[in-house]
Amino acid sequence: MRIKMNQEPLGVASDVVLPQQLTRWSNTQPPHFLTDYSSSGEQPAHNKPPFLLDHQINQKIILWNGDISALQVDAIVNSTNESMTESNPISDRIYQRAGSDLKEEINVDIRECRTGEAIVTRGHALPARYIIHTVGPKYNIKYQSASENTLHCCYRNVLQKTKELGLHSLGLCVINSVRRNYPPNEGAHIALRTVRRFLERYGNSIDTLIFVVDNTDFGIYEVLLPLYFPRSLMEQEASKWQLPADLGGEDGEPLLPDRQIRIIDNPQHTLHPDEESIDISTQLETSINIEHAFSQMQGDLDQQRLLGERPLNDPLADIMVKEIQHQERYERLLRRARTEDLTEVSGIGCLYQSGVDRLGRPVVVFVGKWFPFNKINLDKALLYLITLLDPIVRGDYVIAYFHTLTSSNNYPSFSWLKEVYNVLPYKYKKNLKAFYIVHPTFWTKMMSWWFTTFMAPAIKQKVHSLPGVEYLYAVMSPDQLEIPAFITEYDMTPLYKLILEEAYKFDDSLSFSR
Image (cartoon, rainbow, N blue to C red):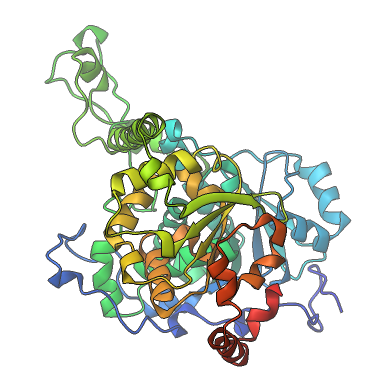
């Protein structure tokens, strides 16, 4: 039977997911090995762990990759737009399952939801009693502080509504959206620290909080959750190095120390350094809906601007400067790439575009055997990579990396991979939809796991290991794929066939793309 939320359930539909069926964070196991940062010589960002091991809080947390509309909880979260008409996978499932009564309630009683707010409706035909709707911000580096603060308000307002309504279980989706250009890893940090701070203060009001994530975000949350919700003393200790230096205020809100409103008696005195300032944020009783970082302004910015100075200890300015420097560096490299002679790299033929996949996305091919890492000019290799990919990555694209018959001479170092990853702008990571590794070995699996776990969690769920070329044909037509003959010939060797048979025995998932 379908559970009506205005009635006591007499049973449970077959596709309804109960929280007790899911694994609590406290019952998951930390990895078998953790990096010992204390012996690395690297200075930690924090003198002591910001978030301590707390079994009671960990028992409330669940990380789950599934359909949020199937959860039988007190409330689920719907991330939408201001007119509450956005079409995205989560909203579409919620509206479809809730039925027409939800749309009627919104059209008649709600109509709109402003960015950063949280509005509650009934769950109607959903297993959940309520739906908490919220509107996440659009991300623009020029207004990064406003975006971060608004996203914090979204999560904080959702949690506050849960507390006000006396709800004890919540299915929380990822509110920040790649569609609005919000970097997923930065959004995850804000979500996790906001939830952690809330549970530290109001933990008795919530029994279960389920982070409901899709394939893309699962890898990010899997890596970041132990930093905010450590399961062991080792994870707690490692967080001193892995957590960012800025963890926000008491509620996890972004702190902008350069934005404290100053009230003075005489505007002519703005250049007098000894005058007093008043922080009006402590004098006002504000609701959770207007907890903006703009109410925490400090420092005489007018004086500093008039004198041509940049405020000291200005984290927002530092972030802006770093981002501008990063973009300028990329643009300088792009200009160099367009003017320098790169034939010694392009002539190798290890990197090129080869047609499109079945969704019309360009396919970039990388042949590992032809990449002479120990002999090639790495600076020119980076320039060639940029000049080839820059026009491609403006839209969705995929990469097919062939590890066939590579040797240690072809293996790039982690330091060089990190350098390349840090140089490339966000559009490279955002628009990459799949990274296929064909003919992987133990080395490639370990390298890709380490790299996507600790350096590039945003693309972790986009990496797929395929045992043969034929598995690519499920996502791209053979006539679109131009690859060297030795790669297809490798698939025909007896050894490869034996490996493939063994792979079938131990991994039934390989048949997904046949």
